[in-house]
Structures are given as C-alpha cells and as structure tokens.
Amino acid sequence: MTTPPPPAAEPPHSLGDPRELADAYLDYYRAALLRKLDGLGEDELRTSRLPSGWTPLELLRHLTWVELRWFRWGFEAQEMAEERAWGDRGPGGRWHVPEGETVDAVRAAFTAQCERSRAIASGVPSGQRARTGGRFATEEDAPTLGWILFHVLQEYARHVGQLDVVRELADGATGE
Image (tube, rainbow, N blue to C red):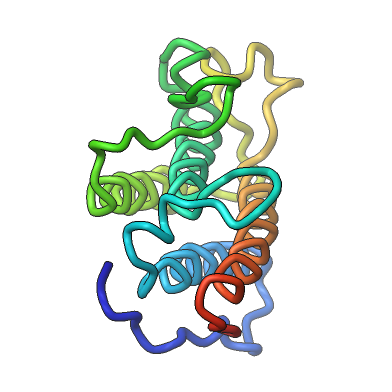
C-alpha cells in the first residue's frame, strides 16, 4: 500500500447539526480505516493476528459490503439478490478476499462504494425513510437516513478500534 497520509483531524468541534456531524464523522472514520491499513505489507493485510481469524483486508471488504447493504440495497432499495447484498463470503460464512484479488482492487472497490454512498445520501433529509422494495419490505421496517448514518458510523468506530489493536500487534503503530 502507499505511504500513510498525515492524520486527519476530527470534524470541527463547532459543528452542532447532527446531520453534519454524522456525515463528517463517517468520512473521518472511512479515512481512518484507510490510514490504518496504509503501511501494512501484503502479508500483514492477508494474515490474521486475532483468534477470530479475520484479516485487515477482509475487514476492508466487510465495510465495503456494509456501505452497499445500508445505502444501495437499504436506503436506495436497489434491487439485488439478498445473498449478493450480504457479500461474497468464503467457507464457513467468513468474509473472504481471494488470493488473486489485489489489495489495490479491494481498496478501489471500497473507495468507489463510499463515493456511491455519499452520492445517495447527499442532499437527502435525515428524517427521510429508506425506500421499500430493496432490503425493507414495508415503510414501518424502513429506517430513516439519519438512523442509517449513525448505524454505519458505529460500525466503523467499532471496526477501526479493532484495527487499532491489529496494527499495534503488527508493527507497534498506535493512534491515528
């Protein structure tokens, strides 16, 4: 991977609008994920240091599918087979990155999906409910965009925290 960019600052503490905060923190954590992967070699990206067995590259793949599931299939109600929306998993249902798939390809897919998610959410009020017909069958089941943004944000915060531990075990790097 490339040389890590300088650490990004958290969103300004002057932000008070919940939607602006959600959008800004989601982008902050998307960038934090990539910063934590930068500097890890191919072997470290494809090797697990945890009892659960997931690798950093599999985590990047997982978050790509989180974006797709919540914004495209969920909020936008893009038609797709349910098994497709849950991603390509390997044996035992684990996230899987085939050996022949390059790190750059996995990263590019993540970046493209994040851009798509931003475009879907752009200009949409937080209180708007997800469309029905994709992930959600009825309007009562459909969460608001605000709920989806915060759900995806907490998913990133949790996984970036896990990646903190993996990175420290791999090369001692801590922090941003």
